[in-house]
Image 1 (cartoon, rainbow, N blue to C red):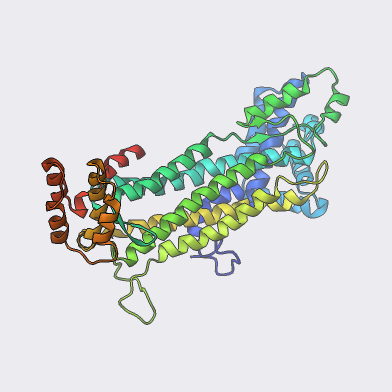
Image 2 (cartoon, one colour):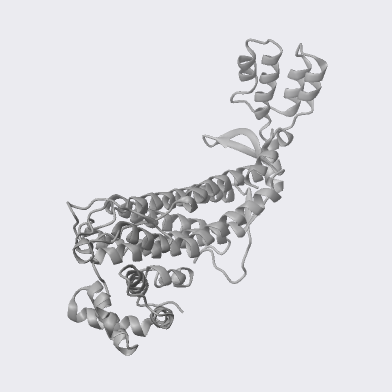
Amino acid sequence: MENLLAISPVDGRYYETTKELSNYFSEYALIKYRIIVEIKWLIKLCDAINKPLTQKEINELNFIISSFNIDEAKKVKEIEEITKHDVKAIEYYLRGKFEDLHLSNYSNLIHFACTSEDINNLAYNLMLKDGLNNVFIPAANDLVNSVKAQAIALKCVPMLGHTHGQPATPTTVGKELAVFVYRWQTILSSLKSIKLRGKFSGAVGNFNAHIVAFPNLNWIEICKSFVEDLGLDFNPLTTQIESHDVFAIIFGFIKSFNNVTMDFNSDMWIYISMNYFKQKVVKTEVGSSVMPHKVNPINHENSMANIRIANSVLSALADNLPVSRMQRDLSDSSTLRNIGVGFAHSIVSISQSKVGFEKMIVNEEVLLEDLNKNIAVLAEPIQTILRKNGYINAYEMLKELTRGKDITISDIHEFIENLDIPDEDKSNLLNLLPENYTGLASQLVDFIC
């Protein structure tokens, strides 16, 4: 049952679709990822300063991470009520846990030489990495694979093409679906190749405190190794904050994926309205409160609406996060907390698009009927054959025959019979119908495999 008091639909109406994102973009998740960074840093630091932990102590520290839950997160928030500083609350929380585990002799090393943003940027990087890999990319792949399967199954089913909304050269249903699959695949391939980038270099990015405390240590290498051990690239040149340029690139790719989905939804909506596709009827569902016959393409419409919200949020993130006055200002802190909103509406759009598409059934009877009503599309191959055989005015001849006219296959055949062209070319043209004039459409589908 949805939360009827939720202000945002992603936490209410769409919660079942978006709830997995709570593991990566909620306040609870942010606290947990901060704790992961703090503990992993302490373990790395102890090695660096030659005060190594025993395996038992390391296990106890890792248990703090593995046993962390909502109740523990509430304890952190209670401390934050006093400190009014979210990252400092993490430090004080860990001090308490260290006491419980008899590790108080390491408490002075919690958050050692760190600025809050050292912890925050790594936490957000890990949240984004895991959210992408565990939720967004799998959901995107589900949609792509669903459309891909139908593209392959329908690769030989002919369909009238439309350019500028007007009848055009025939294609196949599968090839037109494959266009979207290929676009999605290209974006996802680029998205998967991006390596997130973290900083860990102190208050203004210069390792100032590190060098004062332990001047003989190679802090750049130590911190680089630490960041890379987390599965991130190391950014050596920063202010207090990591520049968020890679975040902006990622949000741009998600927007691009969403835009292809928007284009896909738009075409599917039009094909349904043209009756090129029928929709499966669910007996218990209602299409209209007053028109009993209606079966509306609501999932595609819902998907498009959520894309508009998602892309607005992602655009705001991409435009604002890379801008920070001088060595830093706090604007990125508030902005970053909305990453989950952009992801959530993207996930809803993907889910709704997939549901809508899987309700669609190709209507081959209507497709063939429309092809046969538009014999004039054969003007293209005829004038091409005439050009091949030396006719300079081939285009004009076919324009005179077909443009704005309701011609039949008999009219086309009569025209062909009177042409002065080789018998082989004439025979090929006489055998042409809109339904078999699809070029290499079916073969092009193989590119998505």
